[in-house]
Amino acid sequence: MVSPGPTCQHCGIALPDAAYVDRPRVFCCHRCALRAQELRRLLKQVERSYLMTVEALAAALAPTPSRSSTCRRSAC
Ligand SMILES: [Zn+2]
Image (cartoon, rainbow, N blue to C red; front, side, top):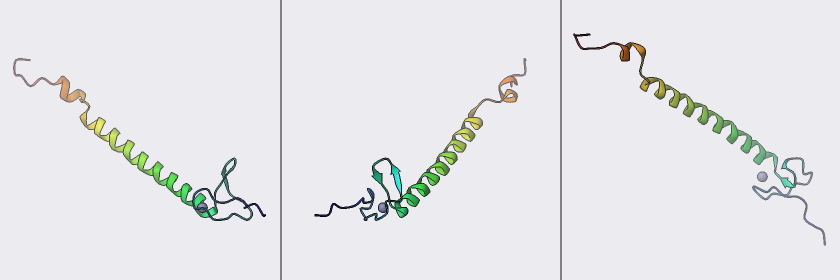
């Protein structure tokens, strides 16, 4: 009986040359490796956009010196 060769751990196709290895003993085909790489790139873009939004919101809500130091009462 022939033991099955390595297969992609994500989609299950046979990997005759086992050229793509994501981690030790975890085989991954070229298509799944590219898909994971694209997903990581997109997640970084989303994370960067999220951080920029949070920073802009924090800057908009932070008190500015001109607003906080100017007293609007006429007695000051
Ligand atoms: Zn695959």
